[in-house]
Amino acid sequence: MASLLIRCDTDEVVRSLVVLALCLAAACGDNIRGEGDEDAGPVAHSVFVANQDALVSYDLGTGWLRPGRVEGLHYPNNMVALADGHILLSNPEENDAGEVVVVQASTMAEVTRTPSTMEESGCSYHPNQLYLTPDRRFALVLNDSCEGEGSSAGFIDVRSDSSSRFALVGEVPLGLYWHNAAFSRTQERVVITNGGDCNEVLAIYDYGDIDHIRKVAALPIEAVGFHNDPPADGTYDPTYCDNDGEGLGQIPGPGECATASNGRAYCTIGATGDVVSIDLDADDPSFDLVRIRGRWGLQMRLHPDGRHLYALHSYPYGGCTIGQLVVIDSQSDAVVAQLPLGYYGPGCTEDLTGTLFEDAQPTGLTFTLDGQTLYVNVGALVGDQELVLDVRDPAAPVQLGSLDVGLGRGPDVLSGDGRFLVHVEGVEEVGTLTLIDAPAHELLGVIRTEEEPRVAVTFGTEEGPSPQDGPFDP
Image 1 (spheres, rainbow, N blue to C red):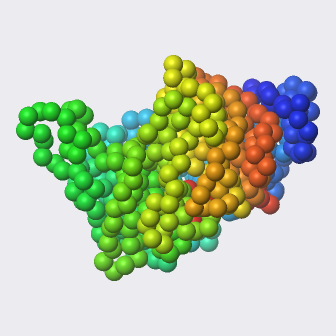
Image 2: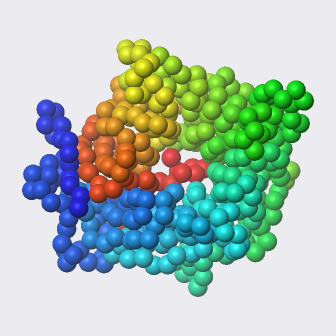
Image 3: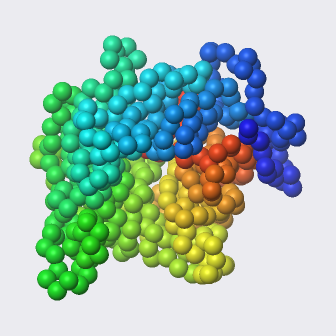
């Protein structure tokens, strides 16, 4: 049983009816709605939260736990919401291939479970990232390999008028381990990274013929400064691609990708901090490497202006900083800003050395819909701050004071109307959802969840789905 609003900002002026509703609900104690209180009609603006074994939802206007619960999950990894109110969730099955679970938002009823792969491969395929193609015809599920072999991209039909809706209709093999993707704006093309592969860092696929998905081009590891020759003297070589864990090298570790308005796609290279710039739409796609000072850059998002790419680095860090923010201008592929990120805000006001947060890292980027504010999630091990930046000038971000969101680690999700940033927190089976007024940078309140949350999306009939990770959604 959940309880609502464990923190209210009573010393500040209450600027939202949401805050008042949340605080009143907390005073009443129980926040679980009765089973007969809602019908299958329009969906009130809600956040859908998956913990390690179930999916539940909360009304964002009142904080009530909505009726309905989907059981039988196993450490779900990612979720997306469709415009018609269906929630898709990638669910790795224990000792099995995995599936995508489809749920109707209005009733919290399970619609179907679609295998994420057509292969009979046991533990080798675990569904992780989920994306919607730009035309919203397909959901792309990226299956990670968990035994050093076997990995794929599956395409699930999500068209509302299709007789094969929610069926897996196409699949293509990928390289090793984890994956991220970004789509072309003009063609049925997608670039997909291979997180631990020692042959291809990433590849471009044409899915115009869903029955015959075609690899268009690939980027070898040599193009990003790696090789496959083990060190002859057995000493560590940072350019040797070591995906066997022998300790002689490292993997390139490409991370997230995004597509700018000019059609170029960009993907981060984790180990080096560099970024690959890709001429995604060319008949013969080309690749350029943008060199950047820093390392372990995995997260990337496109600023809503469509021109500037933002990437996070976990290194350099130390003292009062936890990494850096890098800005790339897609018109020139130039690095136009590198901003050290202070844990508590701009300026070095408090040394993190020896504290619980000395290893905190920036782990997520969320822009407000108007493109004026950027929120940086802090996670990795644990953190209690949400970093806030003024990005009205996309080429010159300015860090503001951080928000205290409570101890935890988890992702952020922006509501479809851009009003709420929901910060998902979870530590040792205790979870909370911190609601932030996204345009105003103000804490609204906290909903305590019954178990440690892993991933979340929002949906409301009027507000629509929360923006997905991808090429032109923030």
